Length: 108
Image: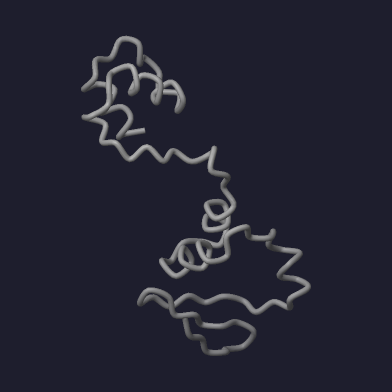
């Protein structure tokens, strides 16, 4: 990550894109931005162009808040899909078959 100073802002190069960020003192920075629990993940997300807020939210998420089930929807049972639909608040889920639940989850 490189940068160039320009009238109170810094041009930051991440992932082939240029971002203009204002310069802040360390005192202001710690006041404006909450502490990051996983700095490495935060920086990687910022390098991909993610906003500070979204990168911080993801880097600070607790494991229990994350859905690590990478099993494709097609390989899950209807009951598993129904429970996932219930978690995310999809209405009409009780009347949906497996294909309907998959479509609703993907479009949610």
